[in-house]
Amino acid sequence: MKRRYSCIAIILIMCILSACHNKKEESVSTSVNDTGVTTEASNDISDETRKLLELGEYDDIELKGDSRDVVSIVKNDQRFLFPECKVLSVTYTTFSENDTFLSLNKKEVLELIDLIEESPILKDGDSLSNYGVKENTQEKYAKICIVYKNSHGEVQNVWLNTFKGDVLHFCDSSGEDYRIGPNKKLVKFITKHTGYRVLSTADFDKIERIVVKYNNEEYQLSAKKTEQFIKAVKKLDKRQDEFHDSNLTALAYTSDRDVYHIKAGVGEYSENDIAIEGACYEGTENVVRLLEK
Image 1 (cartoon, rainbow, N blue to C red):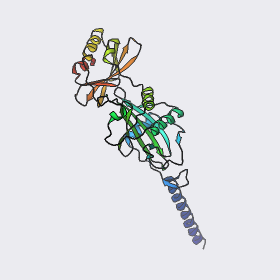
Image 2 (image 1 turned 90 degrees about the vertical axis):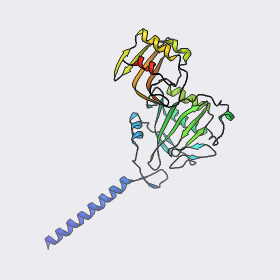
Image 3 (image 1 turned 60 degrees about the vertical axis):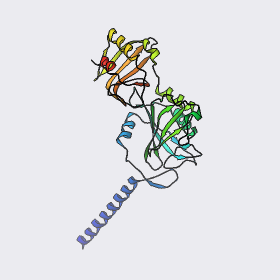
Image 4 (image 1 turned 30 degrees about the horizontal axis):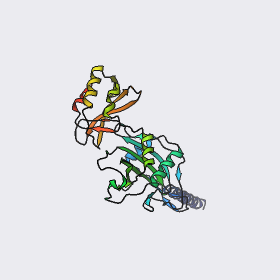
């Protein structure tokens, strides 16, 4: 009889443990959002997004509001409206710099979101000349990426990817590419916080010395090579929109006590292209050779 009771007790204990385990698994796979609706949390983050988050994350920056969706960005009166979410990070990339975390405070992050939401969506095929932008205006490359987690726990990205005048390309997490603007304040915010600048050909003579960084080593160009570099690069005036940098970078120090980034790599039109801050030039084999050790 005692043995029978012992077996029953063991069975009861196993049932209780199994029930507790199942309840724990259920609590891990679900979460309750602010509206009280239980939803599945998603941890499916792409490698690209994971690398961006490794550069830095914000704390306690949330977007709230009854008009916001709980899942994704929506069009609201021909403007984009972010969902209820937690903003995780903002990074940027330019011709001369790789993905870099933007150390913004909470007020600045919210200002950036407000400026995006205030920008009207341009109609498909609408000419930029209707907005005071000349068709031959140079497109500037300064890619902003905003990573956020919506109320369902899904991590999503949106991009501000290049701009002409005060009109910007806006890409949502579905890959759709829109034009928003014109918004002078938004462009000013981006250029200010990303340090976006263009060293014009008229200012190349201001370069006093160039320090090359290559394979974790640094060396300074000789005065003769610096002079040759300036002379060669002044002849280049064609710019392009796509640039894929290599591990060869340099810093140009000017007489204005300013520093400009230089990168050499593969561009859209040539295997040897060069980017100096915001401007990219093609066919620069001779210039790139001057930067090589």
